[in-house]
Image (tube, rainbow, N blue to C red; front, side, top):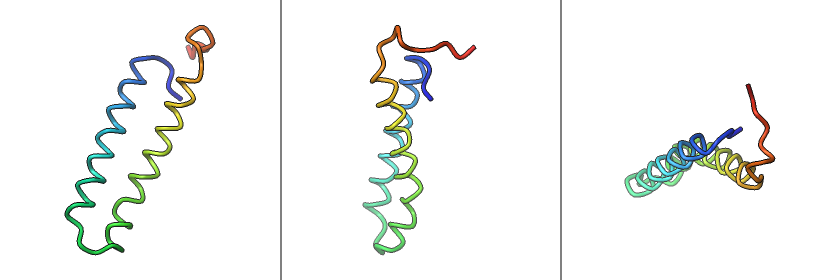
Length: 68
């Protein structure tokens, strides 16, 4: 789970990198089956990270629990 704004920024940057990788594979892979096999893990990880971002952003800063 994302614990602070710094982790949020890192996660957003990671999502962007994964999205660019998927777009790159989409542009260069000629075989649809190979494409789907290549990107399935990236897409699953993007979904997982986006859910974490959504959960973090749904909370007001005063609702965040310290994880010390």
